[in-house]
Image (cartoon, rainbow, N blue to C red; front, side):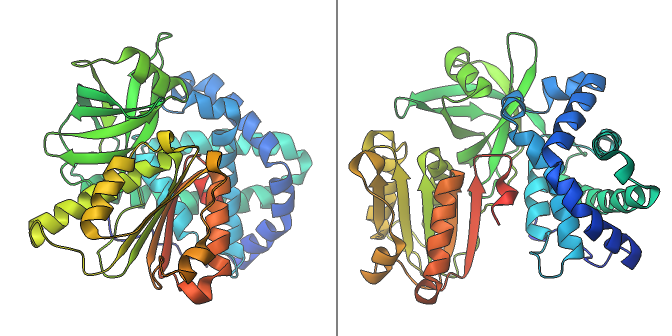
Length: 404
């Protein structure tokens, strides 16, 4: 599921009166967002237990990551509406919309979230939620919901499916151990031929307690017969896949989604990954080679250079080292690695000075929060040398929109 068009947001959709009310109440909402989130989810899951069992990832709920993500996204959107100097909310909404369609979210669920979220806000803030405050925040929520619903309908339409109808059976054809903690899974499934390089699928498994849990995995390879992903042992779904799903078993998968996709090859490309964040980059490298083979022949090279950067705990933990070496060798492109057990770090200034990094490149980043903040800080520090055309990124957490 993919569209070239982004969500359309009218940053002047609030009336002046509502905007003034939002500015005045934002500090109180922001200061209490974690308490609001906890109460919101506790109430919603009590009334709709199937959402926790079948839609929301329980691991994220236990860690508090998902709770902060959903509730804070509304406050972040409100801040973007009333502050013209704030970043555009388009990127925030694009990320959320793709996550939603990868879970099969439908329009009717926005009412459930609204009712429970506003009940939580009222209970936490008490008398501070005057009728005027409630009306202004209600307006913010439905502006955001309207934009997301329209964008998500477009994504569903792009795959030719009804809203939410994104689940397909996926039969495990083969699995392969890549590292001590990472396994590659190849599934037979329909509907993946139009996958964009860098996208992901949500895999759903039935756990021993009867809950159907979902987790997203970046796609490595795909065609009209199926797809492959890499699974690192981490959390309920990944552990269940490694411990219990064997060849010929069938699970659920959702049609591909995700905004971090390899764009047209019209400028240099730099991919930067950490740990299992190399998976979407592996999908991009595979797609690049396929494109070159299809368009120009086996001896071809891309018109613009590509540079691959990767950081990991150790050499043995780099799940896609062989693939990266094979692709970069064929393209005569740089592959730069940094391993923590060797006290190495990706130093963009040094790589720019020795000519490894091209100027004016499209940058694609995937890794943990601290790692990506470091890379983005380095890009900002050395932007007059590197002149990045665009910086695209994906994180491991539900709060990826927080890293702007």
